[in-house]
Amino acid sequence: MNTLTKTAPATRVLYTAKVHTTGGRDGGASRSSDGRLDIKHSLPGSKNPGTNPEQLFAAGWSACFEGAIGIAARNMKVTVPENLAIDAEVDLTSTDGAYALQARLNVSLPGLDREIAQTLVHAAEETCPYSKAIRGNVNVEIALV
Image (tube, rainbow, N blue to C red; front, side, top):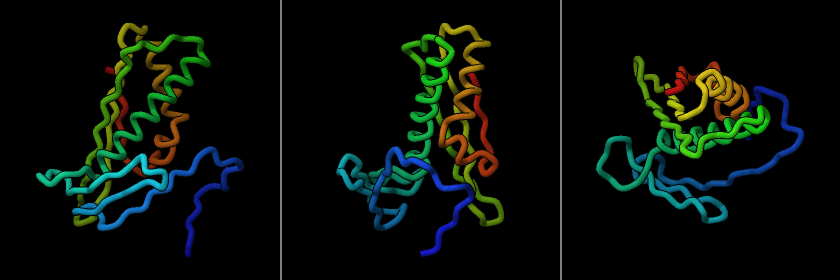
């Protein structure tokens, strides 16, 4: 097995997600080792039951980003609004037959001073593992709405 490592290995693994996938994005399925995730895959835009990798990425990234906002807020001693919400959009794109992703996060922190909210979003962008993983590899827009 060949591995590609871009950075030094982690010193402490906090969690390992284990998922077994068969059949790919068109009619395939994925199941986690603990059984909590058990999904069918379908092509984006199809009428077939199931989800697609872009939706899964959008859900994971936005949930992680919200957690990073929470950590930043605790560090700044700021109370995060109960109705904090993130709308994530992940595009599957193609240029000359080469596939890529581009993505947007629209972050809503209602009732919070705009400057404080922007500071929280910036801190989350710097610390969220998903944001760090795609930095420099995916065209990303993060907006405070």
